[in-house]
Image (tube, rainbow, N blue to C red; front, side, top):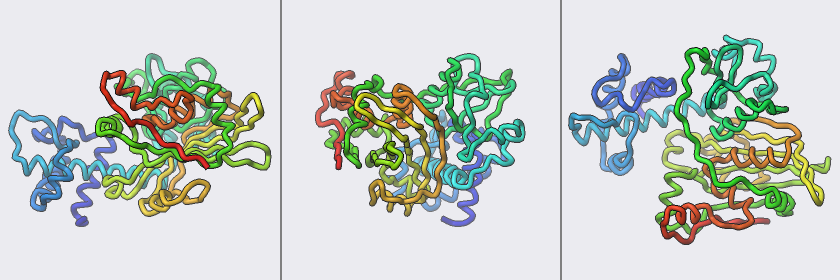
Length: 388
């Protein structure tokens, strides 16, 4: 990419990350100055270099620079706007990953406003939930000294909902979580945005989970298998991009079992352009006997791999050590119950039907049930489980 072109894309990506770019802008020239100047410059340069491959790659998509307009827009300009928008979104993703690799709360709006929070953070930058209240109303944020603070955006919203519910009930116990470094709002000026998370079916049953935990397999790999075209569309539209899920259990010297689960996505064209891939990791130390499970702790992390490192990760299996460039802890809970552990495990992997199937003794594929519920005939759904 040309240096001057990359500079323009980075400028717009920075604005996009702050929320300054909205879908209704740009087609009618309504973006705030001077962003319009950068957008026009980017679209003009891309328009001069469009090719047939651009039509194939970007034609089917809508992006932040492609919106409805009463005035017809020439196809070439529309394609250039679409390509520009996707390039900016990809650059924003790359900048997010770069920030995660070198993240620090130092100098952040959060610590400038509340410097005392720095003393409450542990070595993983997690803060005890006991210091916060739930905000009034149906929100997924927390309250501290008359301000609303957002939980980190890299935590799945489904988990945020559970954490905030714990705070509301006064049962936060020894929960610790990560806060957003930027979003601090006076309660009087706070308005909850409309956000939804996709959840999967009924919760796990304790007896099924216990049976799985006692399974002696060291490594279990879950993959999607035998999807019809209908089911592929359902996966593309509603479920995570997943290459496989790896579940590894190993015996520790203190008698506990170390239980690690990593969700590994397939490498997409977007990942190649961004240069990074993010995965989710769940870890817990478990003590098992014939009738019960005791959980020493449970935690979850976001791993950030550079693209070439992630290729190495896909070529290996746990417990092989392919170290991610970034390891960002999302939360940690000490001495949790089986019910708490099941909730955390489920909510740590939103949009992942394989996790549900793994702990469901009925072995009824989620995709098949979804199709039946919508009165659609679909066969061949379900995941494949390889245990060693």
